[in-house]
Every structure is written in structure tokens, then in C-alpha cells.
Length: 445
Ligand SMILES: OC[C@@H]1[C@@H](O)[C@H](O)[C@@H](O)c2[nH]c(CCc3ccccc3)c[n+]21
Image 1: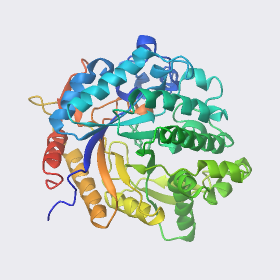
Image 2: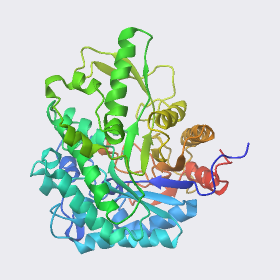
Image 3: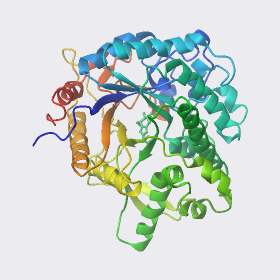
Image 4: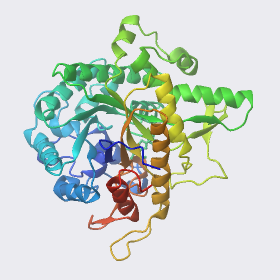
């Protein structure tokens, strides 16, 4: 079968600033909420922090060479807001911008398209101390930051993502407190979410002012399947679908929130004015899809406010994150986006798996389970392409083993292993597999 991937399909890998760079305060950079969160005892497994991470801040050109070795046609990375604007607003730190300009120039020299994410969870502490995403001024702060970066890099960066996973910023960040800033509150999440959507819209407006048209939002999506055909589980799956999959996309595309959210949050759900809803309607030029697994859902009255929980199937293959390997869910997600949002341009901005990889042997790490995971999910993407989905690229999460947030360095998603001691990069067999996929334009899966 001729591979359905077009010649201009982008084959990428993805990372984020706090997870790989290290040196969070170097050259005038201001601390982020993740620097503070990781240094708060008990928040991150093994007391790991991003102080060194992959030391990408000093090895970026070496890492670009690895990307070229893979034959990547795109590389998705994020900028640390605090490197560019140490106080989050106002004075620009030129040494911080210089790091990203050197990275972008190196990518372009190797024929790799930069895909830059403006915000991958690392809000400057200086802004958090002014209320962070709870402050109604936060959308303006973000637009100022975005404009600063666009002016410096838009002549060389063809693809932009405003926010990575506003749902994760909102729910683990402000509802259950698993991720920075670690708040646990029912009233804060709806307001944070609305400010994030306003921030996205204001950044897109700043981008449009430059006359450009290649900017979008990256969302985490997972199909929600009821654990049983019982009405309670069906209802729970529908509620969790609204909560995870439709909350931000319906707002972005339709300018309205799913009505389930008012039920879920009850009195904590604000009355949003028609004017405010009109402002968040901003679909952008594509949707970035971060896909890892599906959710198997049962009703759970003991778990407010959703009254639904995701369960781990006992009869399925799981990754080291206890996420079910479920490639069909990627096809389902892509077809759902095609049908619900009128076939928007899509990039898979993250897809990958953590497994407990063995030590390297002769400089190579055998990771057959990751090869199988990637093969199955690239096939699932091909199936969606054959059914008319406007899919334009695929990024593996991640190029390198890196700082996996609250899990620290214990969970490894990389195509390259990063030695915990000297940070040496070593290829895994999944890197060799992916190089073949790219060389054959998808035929090798
Ligand atoms: O967990 C793997 C990756 C993270 O390393 C990325 O930074 C983040 O963009 C990302 N999102 C998801 C799916 C949503 C999710 C986020 C955090 C925790 C659990 C699920 C998985 N991942």
C-alpha cells in the first residue's frame, strides 16, 4: 500500500523548555513557577528538578545534529517566557532571546522547520505573584510576550503554538494541584481557563497584525469510553468528554462552553458575558493534537466535581505511566475533530510512550515496545489521513528523555536516552525506526 503521507508532511519530534534546557536562571533569566514548584519538597518524585535536565541550554547545537541525523523535517520546542522577559513583562533579556535565535538558525541550516510553542507551563514567578492566570490582565501580559517573540523570530519561525494544553494548566494546576502552581480550588479553574483562552486570542491578534497565518493551540485529547454499558457509566464518559475534549475546543471554535461544565462546576461556574464569549472564539489556523491514550471511564459519585474517574484496564498493554496503549483512539480522535470542527488543519504535536528502557548495549538502547507503540500510532494516523483528515504533521514526544514534571526523570519518553550522570545522548532503536519512517515517507511502518 502506497503510504498516504504527502511529500510535504512534517515529521517532527517535540520537547519543552523546562523539561530539557536546565540552567533556568542563566544569563538573566527569571524563575518560573516550575522552578519554584520543583524546589518545593514533596512536589516532584525523587526531589528531581529542572536545574540541569538535559543541559540542552549548553548542548542545543549537538541536539540539532541529532535531529538532522533522524532526518526530521520539523522540531517542536517551547520558549521559556522568563528567559525572554525575566519579570514576565517589560524589559527584554536579549541573552535569553539570543539562545532561541541561535537554536532557530541552526534548525534552518539543517532544513528543519521550527515549530515554536510560546507557553509550555512555565509562567514567570513575577507574574504568578501578581495572581498569574487568575489575574484578568494575564491575557495582556501573554500578548506582550508573544509580540516580543514574534518581532524577534517570526521571520524565521513558520509555525507557532500559543499554549500547550490549557486543560493541563487549568486542571492539574488549579483544580487537583498535581502540577504547578499546585492550587486545589473549584472556583479558580473556570476563570483560569477563560483567561488562557483570552490570552490565546490576544496572541493570535498580535500575530495577525504581522499578516501571518500559521498559528494554533495544542490540546491534549483522549476519547472517553464507558467502562460498562450502564447509563451511569455512559453519562460519566459523556461528562468527562466535555471536561477534557470539548471544554477548550468548543470555546475556541464555537465561542461557547459545553453546557456540561456548568453542571460539573455548579456554583463555581461563572456567568460569562456574550462579549467575553465572543472574544474567546478564535480557532486559529490549525489545531495541535497531543494524543497518548484513551480514557476508560466509570461513574464515581465519590469523586466530585466530575463524579467520574478514569480506570486502568486490567487486560490491556500499559505504558510506564499506566496509560493504555490504544492506537485506535488516535484515529477516532482525528475523525472526531474532522467531523465536529469542519475538518480543520491538524498537526499531531505530541504522541509517544514511556517505558522502562534497558541500559545501552554498544551505544544503542533496545526499546521494542516504543517501536511498536510508534508504529501502531503512525499507522493510526495514516488511517485517518486516508479518511480525509487534513493532517499535516506528526511529532514524537519526545526527542530526549527529559524532566517528566511531577514524575521527575523516572519516566522516559525519549527517542534518545540521556545518561543520568553525564547527560550523554544515546539512540534507542525507536530513533532508528523513526529515521526509516521519515526516509520512506511513512512507508516503513
Ligand atoms: O506526559 C508526557 C507529556 C509531557 O511530558 C508534556 O510536557 C505534555 O505536553 C504532555 N501532555 C500529555 C497528555 C496530558 C497529560 C499531561 C500531564 C499529565 C498527564 C497527562 C502528555 N505529555
